[in-house]
Amino acid sequence: MHSDHPPPLPAPGPPPANPTELAAAIKSDALVLGFSAVGIGSIELAEDETRLGAWLAAGRHGEMRYMARHGDKRSRPAELVPGTLTVVSVRLNYWPHSARDAEAVLADPELGYVSRYAVGRDYHKFMRPRLAQLARRVARRIGPFGFRAYVDTGPVLEKPLARNAGLGWIGKHTNLIDEKAGSLFFLGELYTDLALPTDMPSTDHCGSCTACLTACPTGAITAPYQLDARLCISYLTIELEGAIPEELRPLLGNRIYGCDDCQLVCPWNKFARLARQAGFEPRHGLDAPALADLMTWSEGEFDERLASSAIRRIGYARWQRNIAVALGNSTPTAPVLAALTRAADSPSALVREHAGWALARHRQRRAAADGVSD
Image (cartoon, rainbow, N blue to C red):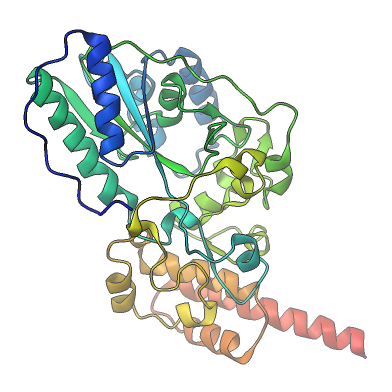
């Protein structure tokens, strides 16, 4: 397994003789640095720009106002980073070796489900330094050049760029899929001003399969290749800042951070590769946490335990909001009800409201059960 720190820079070598040799060297360096796959793609995204514009116009991005903030720069790399000619796209497998079986956790209403990409360390902390070092390795070969690295941190159409680089096609669930590695990986990009030979773009192999559409708990995949983020559990538990719509809360089940359902049923993920980084293994039992125990974490414990986790960015109140909803969908055991009763007195109005909803849901269930038994 790779450590959290990139290997040291090698001694300078002779410069590549031509762009083809440089492209090969960049790909070799990327693999040495721990990336699972690498490709070089064009910056032509005209069709993707049209689709993005229609998606935004329909309001399907919800509260993710940053998706529209930079105008066309998201789909025009040379306007975002002037001088960009080609983009080096990288993949990094994240599925952890030791995580509890996902389906088993989803089937247990007293446990919380965290999307498997987030049960370990924050992927940004692994990928950013390595992309930076990839750029330094290129500079050692050819001298200074123009570049900018992105890891889900800027106005970048990372999936279309990865498709252009031959790293996979955009599936019906709108995630990137590779026929030899499934879809359980992160993406990163290095925008460059280098005139490099580009790889062949990937072609679609979803065929007639609609497993992801059927599996989505909230119907967020409204049609093949179309996602309404406002219904997506990942959006609701991570991006949405306020209250989760009441009609959607029962559909979240025990999912407290993200959702993997559309990927769990994808046939191509029988080829998915496990992570090679120790840092992606589960921490603090987040692969199968007891919901009632999670709700007892203080804000200090949340900050300390999740200091190097992607989860920390949603903040303590949203974390408790999500857990309260899952507890409302759980079995009304004594620990569950006690956790919700405490949360109903939270300083956060957001947490209080969701805990109150959960307690009312359990009361309604009990009343309905008593009525049937009578």
